[in-house]
Image (tube, rainbow, N blue to C red; front, side, top):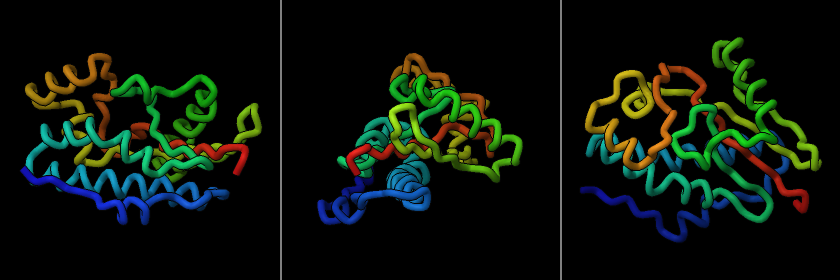
Length: 179
């Protein structure tokens, strides 16, 4: 079993600066995606989808938290979530649906939207596209043993039956008012 360890210096290097623009929000989401992928994909290729599922289950939230600070929160949401904590919250439902529709209408070319909430807080949603590798755990044909483990870890799982290039969810970049 291979273990990947991030040193404190690496985590501090990856910690986000104060983000104030859509471009900076996109960089934060990309950094989170890269860090998660840097842990998830080597596990997937070296140990298989079952080990990758456990890696994602154990580390995805911590990685998101590492990219958040007092000025910005980075998270993931989905219309078909695996973890109920990642369901689309009511206050983002309209904008999420608009991004979802625009993503599909543009064949995946429109991938983000920025807006202010009713509380005048700045939020950016950035589409998460389904890659080929994602299909092992999120596709239409999931290995039986893997499907059972997914349901054990996530009893309310809805994050299945995606096809390549589907919008599987969105990164949420939420700036605090005090930034």
